Length: 164
Picture 1: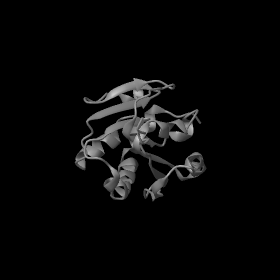
Picture 2: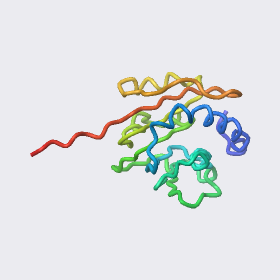
Picture 3: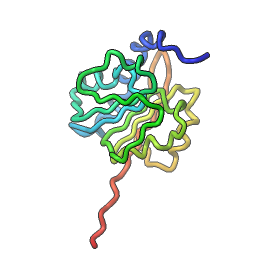
């Protein structure tokens, strides 16, 4: 059955529960004022949640394939409506909730980060996270009560500069 934007709003409560379960496990890794890329931003519920927890990103870029999912768009977020996002820019924090299994090249999600990558998927898609087994996973596990997800938190490193 194809995805329908009409049912998306009913998921908010479940998503907020997952964020609440997740936050204590990731908080110590998040910079105070990160640059944030959200792949599959939708209604920007995670960004609202972060703000309530005192995390104030200095820049938020949101990607989604369906503009209807992002409406009404929120102030302070730059939206890209595309299924082919590409940038050389690196972000402090890249998040991808319930979207990785829909992406053509899922491994690229981690390439946008110079620090942290957070990916969460419904349990039935947990095997899709295997593409990150060569990365440094600093936290992982199940989250949610009504609906279970599996998350991983990847720590990326900035390449060291060599003296010339």
